[in-house]
Amino acid sequence: MKKLTRWMGTIALATTMHCGAGPIAPQDGSADAANNEAGDASAPLPAVEWTPCSLETNNAPDGECATLRVPLDARNPTGETIEYFVKRYRPAGGRGLRALWMLQGGPGASGLVFEGLSEAIGTRFPDVDFYFPDHRGTGRSTRIECPEQEASTSPGGLEITAEEWPACLATARARWGDRLQHFSTTNAANDTALAMRATRRAGQSQFVLGISYGTYLAHRLLQIDPNIAQGVVLDSIAAPGLSLLRQDEDSNEAARDFLNVCAMDTFCRSKLGPDPWAKAQDLFRRLKMGHCAAAAIPAAPTHVLLRKLFASFLMQAENRAYIPAIIYRADRCEPRDVSALRIVLGHVAAPQPASEELRRWGWVLTHNVALSEFNERPEPTAAVLEAIRENAVASRDVTALFQVHLGRWPTYTDTLSEQWATTTTPMLMLSGGLDPATLQRKSRLFRPHFTGANQHWVEIPTAGHTTFASSPFVDESGERRSCGMRMIMSFIENPTAPLDQSCVSRIEPVDFRIMRPDFTRALLGTTDPWE
Image (cartoon, rainbow, N blue to C red; front, side, top):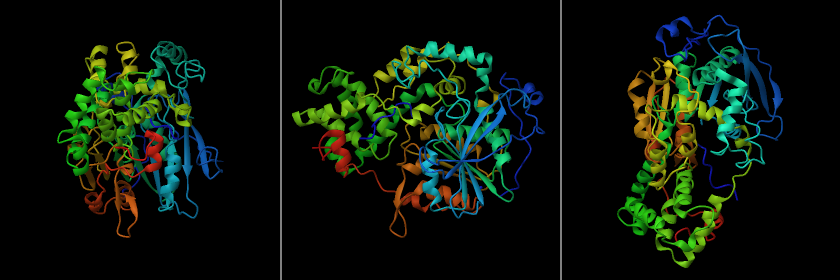
């Protein structure tokens, strides 16, 4: 069975192309420095040489790959360079009228997820050329590595444990020293800007799609060059000022919001009563006191494994409906429930497979950006973060690793990290009402800053993290499609046209009855998730 959990999930236009390099923000916090140390607009563009490569890893060579040399520090365009890897997919028979640059999140994720997605989109939109880079510090761009701590034989395998982090940070500092500060969002945005200019074809419109942290990166791109694209799509928005040290707290808030949806559903309410959130909180209180001890497994306390499972499932729209069913079973705790719970807890505790995504993840990059640009002052104490996790119904426990570095990581400052872009570029901003990683109430900080012509803010009440993956509806032909993706591609086809948002009102409600017998059997050992 496909691995059920992934704890570090963390945390896309018709004006003339602006070809000059925009100002690059300094990292010393000085406004004067911003004027005096801006990127050189006359700097040469990197050479681009495309070679055939597999679109999806280990498949036929139906994609193209290029590795560009980009400045380590955008303020010194003729200084030290690093590698910036980009993969391109041009659908067969397409005319390449538009280019879509797809920016992944994390921070720390590579562009791997877009390999299959671009091919799927390309079947409907063959005139789009798809570009998906690995951000600096990740994947096949210059990745910051800790070979010993990331070895398959190390205690955490590809992932770095709390105990391994001090040695990993020491390795990174020995390799990069003070140059570690250049692995920042601003420099990553400059990489994208240079690559976009270097690869643009005559007459081709360019668009940007940012997902999660990719929205933060896309916004930074607009800060350094407000006219770089003919349109920008932001899906699951990470607004300036967001603290990733609150990720576990945010997951728990999203769990409350999701269980409130359960309360409004006749079937789910019949199982958990009028206040499912209170039911869940009471369950976790009793689990800590020894309730349903027969379901426990040696790996970890039941309430810890369940909170991780629930947080992971909140990130997966297709699986989140299992949360109330598992609460129901754990609360009842009959022998049939004990059997089902022991199976699902075993999945949670099982070692994560050595996936290609994990191999490419930039773990040091994650902490470097998160602790520098998504931090808060003063930092919460380790005790505060531990209390948040221990009192949560849903928590991916990502702050357990961040807290290892509180007050110790060599952070950088960037004047742009809490500022806003000023742009007339058409924008489509999509926010999910049940998003556990970029909460809608926090994403709404974005809305008042971009209210110009052709700048659209769309809220999708039941969507989770990445609206295009969690907004199914049945279209006019009777085909089940994604409302989020429909709006994204309609916007890219004509960014200055009125945006058709009618599919939002037709999105399928959450189905708490869960008619997925094969997956349910693998998850719980029975075809009925409730009984």
